Each structure stands twice: as C-alpha cells, then as structure tokens.
Length: 108
Image (tube, rainbow, N blue to C red):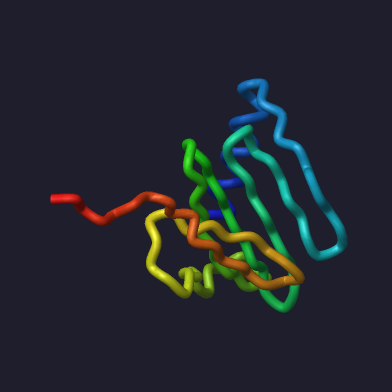
C-alpha cells in the first residue's frame, strides 16, 4: 500500500510539474527524493524493504517489508518509542534514529 501510494505520488508530482530525483541507485538499492521534504528508499533482496521519510520540518519515517509480489509482509517499528523516528537503509538493514528533540519534562 505504501509503495502504491508512493508510486501514485510520483506520478502526481510529475503531472504537476514536479521532478522526483534518483539520488542513489544500484542493483538492489534506490533512494529517491520525491520533493524537497520527502524521500523514498527501496532495497530489494529476498523481500523488498521500503522506507518513506517526510519532513515538515521535523523528519519522521515509516518502514515496511513486502514480498516479491508487493504484498505487505510486515510494518517495521523502531526499537524505541519516539514521535519522530527516523530510518535509513544501510547495507540492506534499517537503521533507526530517535529524531525527537522535544523536551517533554514539565516545569510545573
């Protein structure tokens, strides 16, 4: 579903005059800047790993794993609790970072 949404978003961006750019590409990995504030990473191995990141202005990511027929296998969550989890794909693995810099401690 995320991939179909992303592909639909790419098509819509092109129709509206947008210019998605491939930033990195090799035989198994692709990183695409959809807009100035959205990024899509795809890694194809035994399954397909997709990370979608949006920044407005704080960046946050979601990650999903699909089988080769693009059926969702699993939504991947970060190993910590965060409002703004940031993910990237490195060597076929998701690397999470807590991108939540807000200070939640109250001074009441």
